[in-house]
Image 1: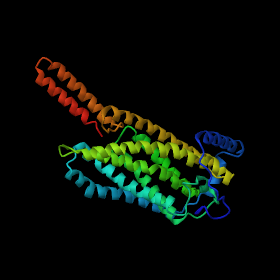
Image 2: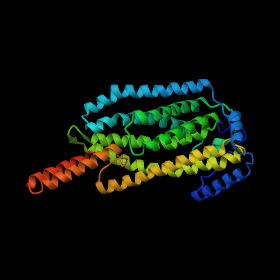
Image 3: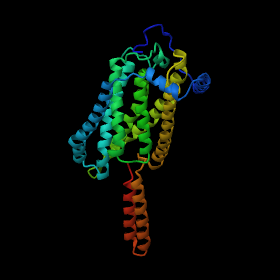
Image 4: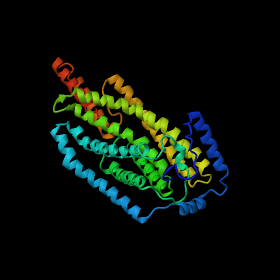
Length: 366
């Protein structure tokens, strides 16, 4: 499956389906596959795994080594570059604490997405324009092209690092638990798709998801930079708003439009047409559907975020930290109590209390 031009695979590009066609054909294909799978069960799964999964101890060792390497590279860049930059820019203390995380992710996702873009648009692979071609000439245990193997090593080891980083290195947010589940599902898809030689569809999945992470971290960095050194910087404010609009649009277009119509249609329908007894058909599609559901879950955050921007005219993070919410709620109660007690003390004290309350509210900005 290194190139779609090999063998006798069809040369005509299939048109991208609509959502109704996807729903009808995918459900029909999955129901038909389930109905004809008379031997489905644990024993068949075990036998299929042993017969079709190909991964070497060298590849496993490289995975763990690179995951460890990403962790060390992040720590090194944080201490030698990101923290000094935050200090020289005189960011607010809370923003300075979060800036290295966003800077690191922006660097990585820009690199990884650029490489995926190169593979899909500047080589002979036509997986983006013709998604069904990812399964043309598929054979169990076939060799993985070196350029795609490199992409898998980079992405797989990074998500291995990310599971650790989300728990022990990143700031904890409302959706951090969902993020851990996301990383586990993504890592499972990467590892199993490589072992079962579904690497072509894997490159397409990674391309459709990484672009949003670039825009998200770019937006967050500009949110931190717009209020620094006690001043306000209009240019960074404009960039943060442009980034938020771009992020919202591409999230819908790449993850909720292209992902189901290109990836899920290929894995649910086209895979059975090219390989009638394709291994672990239900397992991989279940993971991809779970990924789609998480994309929908996060899209709800984006909708809330857009509404909040329209009302507040500012870019905020709607995934506030749990600890900050509790602290801010307690602080609000304290300020209100102080204002009530000082109600008869004069206009000066009342205005001062409102100033403190506004300061606490501003601290909830991303």
